[in-house]
Length: 187
Length: 182
Image (tube, rainbow over all chains, first blue to last red; front, side):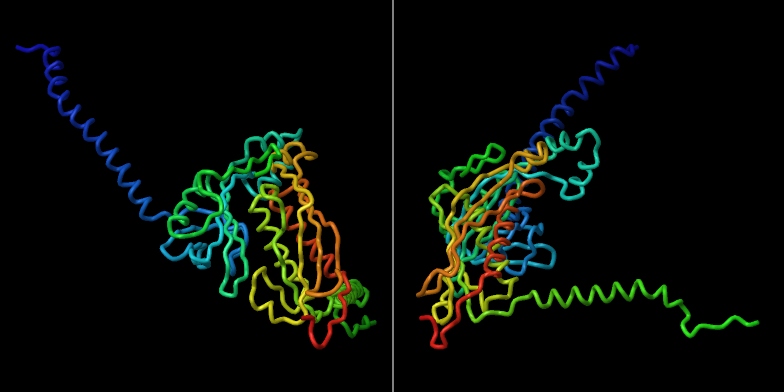
């Protein structure tokens, strides 16, 4: 007659191998999922951006997605969209900036906090963003400027894609200095 | 004795306030309409800000350019506002050209402004010059745009553009020749 200790050890041994296998598959699955996600992001490189200014027919400060296509750079915000042909892009610049988050609502809320607490909140309610500036010419040769802001690290990716598609950039992607905020230094 | 019924359901004294308000509003609108300048016979072409390399970040340069174009269109003082390089401007007889040269640029920080209130302002100052194709300078002035408290750094370009448009709106333009300025 087997004791409960022997039963427990038998159970552990019998579960050990399947458990290890399960862990192995789980790890491999996670890796595979990550690779698939990477491939998916390569296929659909839409970036969430804020259109600061410049696109004809698109409101300032509207949020939307920016997609680099074979022929054009397209911005979509709900039913409104704007596009510029890649061939007409004269220059692409990237930079960095820091901005307060929360908009007017949080700004007003911070003003209402007593004893200067709003100022302390301001210290923690800022985010760094990338800026992407494009210069392009319309059909009549008129110069246009478009400015987008997007999450950190995305502007360089979009610039690389545009340059690969034939857009002109006076500064190569790697050599462009980044604008620093808060210290007053300039690009 | 029956009380005498008035012709109006509301006492006239109660109507006096709204009537006065309506009068004031109509006067205000009339004044506003008179303030709007008539469109001149001139068109204007806007050139981007000229600055030494590295003095002005490209996003600020383009923001000033786009904001100035938008603000000049709002004034309705010019027949047409052309962008730099627009080929259609070549055939326009009465064309003014707006040149902007960077004088000073200080990049501040929105966070510093929010925390300290007194520091972190973003300032941009340009030298404004408007000339016809051939002829004397129409306007030459230094204009500054600043964001001191609320708003992002790029708001300074909006303030600058509004000031530039205001200067041009208040400037009396020379008479145009019928043969054209070319």
